[in-house]
Image (cartoon, rainbow, N blue to C red):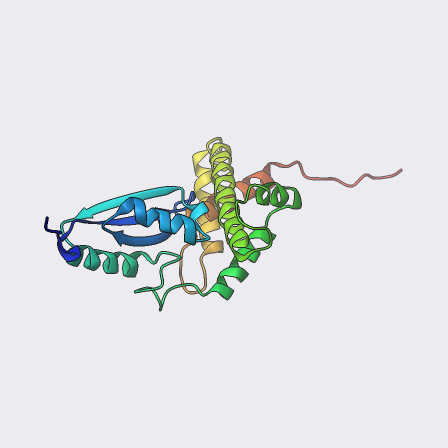
Amino acid sequence: MSVTPLAERPHTLYRFFAEDGALLYVGITADLPARFGRHRDGKPWWSTVANITVEHFEDRRSVLAAEKAAIEAERPLYNTQHNGGHRTDVNTLIELSRDVLLILPDDEFGHLMAESPAEPGSTHELVWGARAASSLLRRQLRQFAAVTQGLLDHLPIDRYCKLMESATERLTSADGAPPSGNELLIEVAYRALAESRPHSTERTHV
């Protein structure tokens, strides 16, 4: 019985994604179950994999080219080959993770880290916590933006336009880069709320 050479066998290109959509790893294999088993047993980041996508190729040559192109274009966090010039080094990753976690209030930090599957005190736990915190903060920002938009919907159109024009001018950076949509919404809502508050008056004692 002849065995088809590895180079001629069908291959699969796979991508591992974190819960927040971040691309963790891109790889190729001719045997998905075995390859995933090696990742599960040997990679500390395996527990953070939430979604997997696969693409199928007729031979190893075509999948190798696709893998190289995907890594160079998409910059997965844990690939090293084809990714050296753009891969975040571990020390930078640790510092960025700490910065993200410092934003959280103590009670939210404790609740979040209690769900970590990683070994307490490990770098993996820190990175897992930063990703979870980033996802939480993004959800909170989206909720805040929705509430803010609801507030602005009650403004007269002429007042809304004036506030938006003022906010755009104020938030545009020195190099001319415009502010993001969320920045504008927050600034306009803040100004609208400030104008709606009753002006405080000093009591006059007789």
